[in-house]
Image 1 (tube, rainbow, N blue to C red):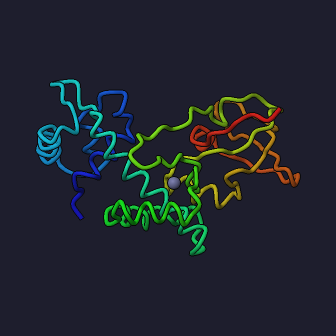
Image 2: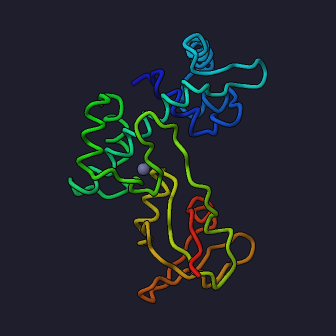
Length: 217
Ligand SMILES: [Zn+2]
């Protein structure tokens, strides 16, 4: 499937394009398309008023572009909640389905879905669900790798990334788990956590950098 305009806007957003300029190279590798098709799409998006392109610096989302990306993220995350809560999907298997559904969901269906789900605030990965016509606003949280030993933390959000989610399922670490950081190995080695049921588990340093937490005092 060739990525469409919406996929571009969402990727630019995910790369931080609401605040920073994103270069074409990052888009090429994110969507696995040729540099030529990226340049072509970028000029289309610029004509449509969705991005601003600065030569040699990259592209940044305009207000309209951010709005479009937010609407997609909104649909994506609402479907994720539906799939997990009502169809028994686990949090590492919802992404692909939501990725397809987000492109075929009207505003009307989105609003009804949101009401049906009781206006959830977060997706199963802890990402904020933007409200209708609102720009997305992600929480600023520290990662698991930012805290010292003996800190008790709650898992609030993880990156919506298949490899990471499969890994978290395999070590049985879940969203909203409360864990104590027992031991941090030197040289970016694994971090040992103790769950509230006293079970210990190890999380790789790389994963810890993509797990967002709040400290519990
Ligand atoms: Zn999600």
